[in-house]
Structures are given as C-alpha cells and as structure tokens.
Image (cartoon, rainbow, N blue to C red; front, side, top):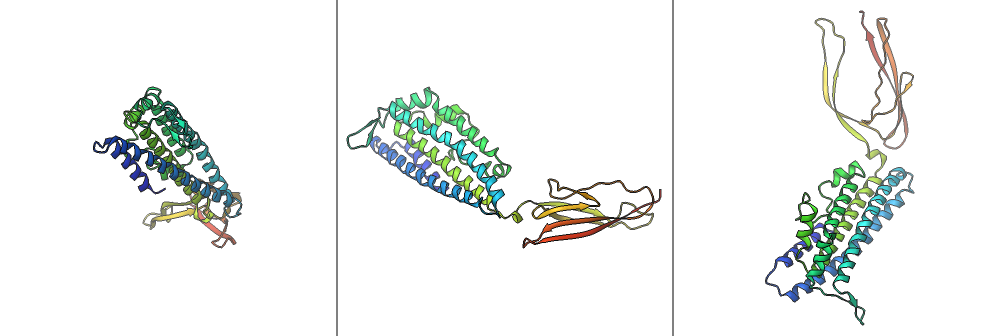
Length: 317
C-alpha cells in the first residue's frame, strides 16, 4: 500500500480528533466510513502479501535460486507467524470494544453499536491496559523482525512503519495509549486500530518484497566484498635498494569459487571471501615457489581452473 495513503489516513484521523467545527454526527459518520475504507484496503493488501510469498516459494523449485529462495522463504514465514499474533490481538481488541459498546446485529444483517461511547474506549484501552499492551506487542514485533537477519535490519531499522508517523517511537506504553485512545469515541478507536493493522500489513508486504528480491538473486550477484589494498614489493630490502608500494581498492567475490589450493593444502574462504594461508619457510637461504590453484565458475557458469605460482626468497641470516 502506498505510504502516502497511510499518511493521508492518519492525517484525516488527527484532523477529525481535533476539529471543533465539524458536527459530532458528521465526525462519527466520517470515522465509520474511514474505518470501512481501511479494512477494505487491509484485505486487498493481504492478498498482495500472499501473492509475493507464493512467488518466493515457487522460486525454491528453480535450481538456480533454490537455496536462497528456501532460506528467505523461511524468514518470511517467521515474519508472518510473528505478525499473525498481533493481527489477532488487534482483532480481539476491536471485538471487545464493540461488545463493550453494546454490539448487536440488526434484522437487516448490519451491526449496530454505540459509536459515540467514550466510556467503552476508556475501559478497554486505558483502564484494562490494552492500549499499553498493544504498544509493547508492536515494539516487540519491531525488534523481533529486525533481529531475523542483518540485511533486514539494515534495510528496515528506521522505516519498518508499524507505528504512526507522527508518533515518537522512543515514547513509552503509557504515552502511546494516552495519545491514541484517551478521550476518543468507539468509532474513532476502531479506526485507529484498523490503521495500525494496515500499517502491519504494509510492513509485511514490504518485507515480503525485500525477501523475494534477496531470494531471487543469482548467486553471481551476491557476496562481493570491497577492501583497501596496500602491498609492498618486498619485505627484505638491501641498503640503498628500491621499495615499491602499491595502494588501491579491490574486491573478492564468493560466487562461483569451488576450491582454492595453496601448496598441497585445500584452503577455505574466510568471511571476506578470500583464502589466507600462512606457512613456515625453509631455514636454508634461496629462492622458492608455491603453487596456487583456484577453481571457479565464470560469468557463463563454465568451470575454470587458474594456476599461479608465488615466488619468494629466503635471505641469508
């Protein structure tokens, strides 16, 4: 769902809450219509979330993406399980509010309740602590989602969007409950909770799209590490000799590397995607060579073997 729609809805809610010019009946009607609009949007966005998740699961059947797609599909499922609990919690709060406000079903099948019941909101959201509990659950959900993966944290740490844009995320549960629900009629409280539900659904959609992007990447797009390079021509320099220093920025890439052998040793890649090998040199002065063999796949997926020789000298003590 576009972020501007979310901003517009909350702007409308805030305007209606502070407007002194609108008649009470008109305010209640607008709140009711707004709540219905939000619920319809949430249902539509939920369908979009399911489409993205289904596409990611389908990716896992493609040999090119299977491992990545399965890994990111698992992360999406964790997000969905966490979010489902909070969706249900908000749904239960709305049911409790309606019951407290005298909810009944008319003969024509439409629901009826006291839309202007301030006491019902105060009891359910303030006195019984559901407003504070809602804040704690959203904060816990926010932190739990960010802890699923470092890439998710990097992308969404400051813009997951579970809380209203105007609300300070550093506030506490008491302030959250007071600012959003204290002194509000039933229909307004329902609209606010519906908006929080759609915020959650939008976050799920954005997360699902992000996970889909990660799970759909070709392995050749991943695991590339830039780093500064500074090398010297020799570690042993004779008096009056020449020393050459070379500096720049390069990168190692992990994709396609199948094996690296240095001397007679198979050397695994480290976290920065390169192989590092230390060895003791002979005690006898002279020139020596170490064979290095790198097996990898090129851009077209063809196997390539590159052989190099590293030469070094052992100086006389």
